[in-house]
Amino acid sequence: MAREAAPPRRSARESRAIKYLNSPTPEPEPVKLQSSLDKGPPWDQSVVYPSTGKKRATVNYSDLEKLDDGEFLNDSIIEFYIRWMHEREKERGNLKNDQVYFFSTYFYSALTAPATGRRGLNYEAVQRWTSKDDIFDHDFVVIPVNEHLHWYLAVVCNLSKIKRKFESELGRRKSAGPPPKKYSPETPAVVIIDSMGVGRSKTIANIKEYLIREADDKRGMTITKDDLQGMNAKVGIPQQENFYDCGVHLCGYVDRLMNDP
Image 1 (tube, rainbow, N blue to C red):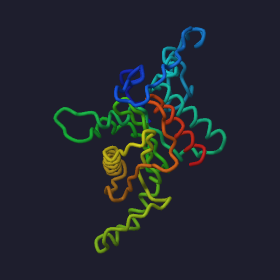
Image 2: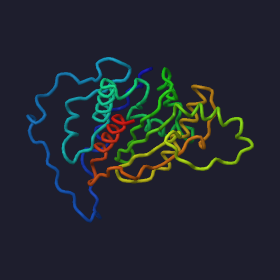
Image 3: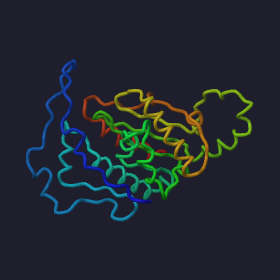
Image 4: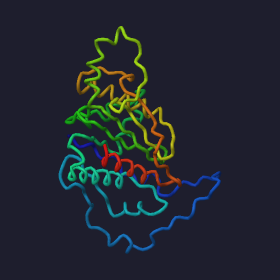
């Protein structure tokens, strides 16, 4: 896969917790790391993981401050943790090599960034990111999303089944009415997991639109938004109890997914 161009480095989207003046319960003052001894001596080189392969994460010494209480995890920490978990679960035999596809933490931002003279999604900005990969061969596609200083997770489930579903329904689609809304465990779907419990209908619509464009571009396959369900997961989803642990919850969601896909 062609390596995505490295975007400008983001610290944490913001380095400190957001202060909400109308919050009924003031946030306790976070305990900060005061001494460089807490982080160890500065590194001479960046930590790159894994050492080989198409997709690698890079963490610098300065990123460690984002692990403090009251800080938002940044892109580098989240990317590193996801890559590490992915390799760990493959080594344990819990995941097949092509079972889960992970997009970069910058993917959704690039997809939705305004393009000069163009309306809607900026598909061309991410078109080459999968030039050597077919995401429709994977059961799960994981997309970390950051909007307005808040991390949440989008997971496309059962994407590998959409081609078979499309081909089986093509012959009867003209005469049949709209199918009933059923959420089978094998239904291709875009699922949002948000530690604030916020519905993300716009994100679901954007990802569906991306998949429609990607199917046409990479496979010459025509799908519609109705071929993909969209849902905001609510039941049994751990929720954050402060204003800055959204990145920690995102990592926890990914960990659970890879332990029991």
